[in-house]
Amino acid sequence: MVTWQREHGRQSLPWQNTRDPYRVWLSEIMLQQTQVTTVLDYFPRFLGRFPNVASLAAAQQDDVLALWSGLGYYSRARNLHKCAQQVMARFGGSFPDLAEDLQTLPGIGRSTAAAIAAFCFHERAAILDGNVKRVLTRVLAFGADMAVAKNERALWDLAQALLPEQAANMPRYTQALMDLGATVCLPRKVQCDHCPVNALCQAKSAGEALAYPVKTRKLKRTSATLWLLWAVNEKGQVWLQKRPEKGIWAGLFSLPVFESEQDLLAAGGQRQKVEYIASWKHVLTHRDLYLHPVKLTTKFAVPTPACEGQWVDACDWPDLGLPAPVRTLLVNGGLTQVNGQQTS
Image (cartoon, rainbow, N blue to C red; front, side, top):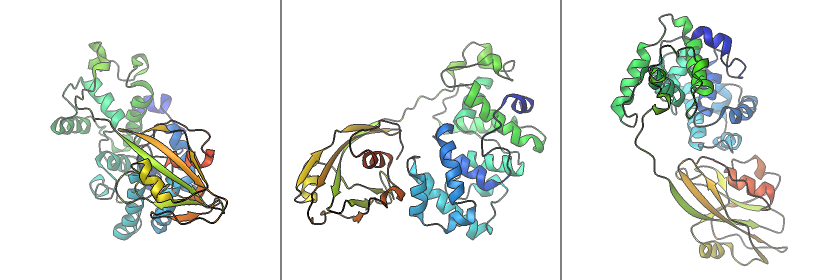
């Protein structure tokens, strides 16, 4: 595994080849439920603004969310900020070097803690993210239902038992598991001929690689219809409100959201022009949002909408933390919508 990673694994990702726990931590959080190609755009921008844990801890949460805008799963950004503040307050600005201590920080689970500890401090700690679960369940033909907590704990024990004896090998071994799951042992396609452990893989031997991992419980998809009030005043300012700390788009700035057209129009007040923008479906990980924007404009002085918010200049809102569909709407002027998978 270690030799394979050195010769065939990924080597040029910007968060590799470093023992800086800040960079490893940031990459691990960004990569949760997010493709590498997307993170490649955000990672350098984030480091440019917040080059270390001290600068991130000292930032305003709104600034962190603004930089995270469009990346999805905004709870990650809020926890990232809280975690940085706790690293400063509890650990003097240095990340703890044990996975057990790292897990006590906001937003850092067992697998993320193990990744930081393995990459940066050579701790013999097993990771078990989605890619690694797939690799290990296939190699071991581990057919227990991964939706059951005790079965996942059993796989953790097996993963720990498989770790290399030499702590110095932990960074490359850990990266090898990640690379196998990301490039060779794929969810719907396997490239067993390129796998360094194909001779040991019980699923391959049985010709049932795609049967693993087993997970019976599926998260039920839900849907919601949202009406977006797009109010523009005579100065070209747009009315934005900050979302509550819980719920969809928590903590972000957004066009006001209403459950019905009637409620939206009542809050908008009298306008010279009412424009119904083409609605579209915005796909979240486990939820579909059917968005109906209504643009209310006038050339004259207008009353403040009857909902919480503030007028924001056109030169200022691009720097705010906005949900991806709201940003798309404002940037494109309502002419084009982009369907995509985003996360709340």
